[in-house]
Image 1 (cartoon, rainbow, N blue to C red):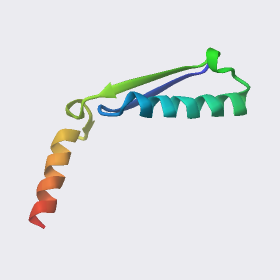
Image 2 (cartoon, rainbow, N blue to C red):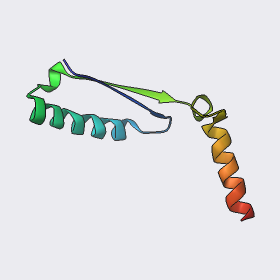
Image 3 (cartoon, helix red, strand yellow):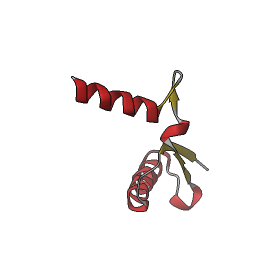
Image 4 (cartoon, rainbow, N blue to C red):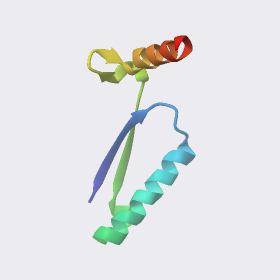
Length: 72
């Protein structure tokens, strides 16, 4: 029973997630012989405020990059 966890920023639609899940299911069946009803995919949506690189949240990084682009 394969289990795939996908962590990503909030904002993807159900249709986008479904398309990704379908793609993974095809690969799992093709490469492992694992039937789709035996596979699990968990999407974990994360706020940009809760995703850090170093000591900066992604929200802070986005704001800094926007300010740099506007000033430069």
